[in-house]
Length: 443
Image 1: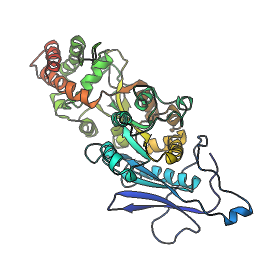
Image 2 (image 1 turned 120 degrees about the vertical axis):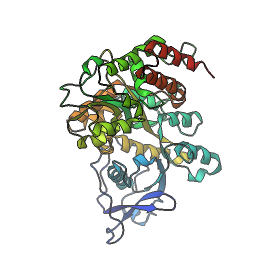
Image 3 (image 1 turned 90 degrees about the vertical axis):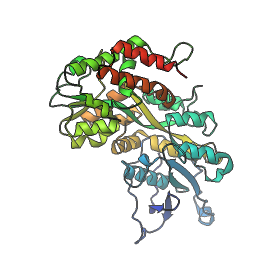
Image 4 (image 1 turned 90 degrees about the horizontal axis):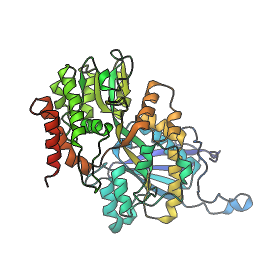
């Protein structure tokens, strides 16, 4: 990566309350004595230099040359990853963007924060503006894996293989590789953040991670039993070797494996470690709060909940959700950078920005600050040695993509009802599993 310019360059953030846009602008000369404070910088990344504009001329002719016009790169992000406000890691990302501009003084970055999903969200806004208002489109956008696939199928983002040869990205974890590729095999995104369903436990009760159901023998175990996507039940089912579709692609469940998964939860209830109150926890945030308040010694939550808040819980440790054979998995989702299919003359600049942001040193610093799971093993390797680093590595090594929302909407409610019926003795695991499978047959 080329060295920083020796001339004085100042960077600041200008928040525009009306548009929700943030502009990182560069200016040469002495730093201002009033107004917003300069953004800090982070160490230069180790990535190889990427295609940028031709270097400015030097020598006598350069003195009379016209200064190059600034090019603007627009970036759309969800609130959780905004380089401003209260978002975790916002100061680190802001510094990294500012330093990018120091290295690329002819590029101005404009950041706009949009809802993660829904009307007015990232994908909706991208699709709505693509044909009717292309001038407002971003050059770079952050999308979750489902929206990335939709954007790629619609031609809203471009393939990245010409900018990022596969061998330069072979340290992405398998789940991140799955996030980044279209069905046809082309890479359309660069994953930068992941989260997963995990377990947390009180290390004063358990000397080692309780990775099997037979090792969860003391204290209280809770999970989001009221979650209509039934992700904890689904995690157990998939860890047993369950599948969600038959050979024709039809959505289906293996009744025997659903019954086996439900049996684990009934057994936990029978020995007194799984209370019926687990059905009241609607999401991972609620079960984390229960663990944080001391109402459980083992709980299912999200990796980000744990990584962002573990310091406030005495003896908190993270691991994978217990599995019957000690070979657990983690259902994960993630976010990727993509280059929007607009302004082809800006694609190389956009690729340079993404190369900067996914550099292992940069990604390592930001992922720690943002409390997300790093998508590259080289980025995790730069985390300080700690139980959290070990936890993140174990989760990413065992992670697989969470089923699509459309699948969870169909399969989740029957599984959640089966769980409630078993825990309340309204059905046996076998009959509840059969009922859940039959519910999938209904239109």
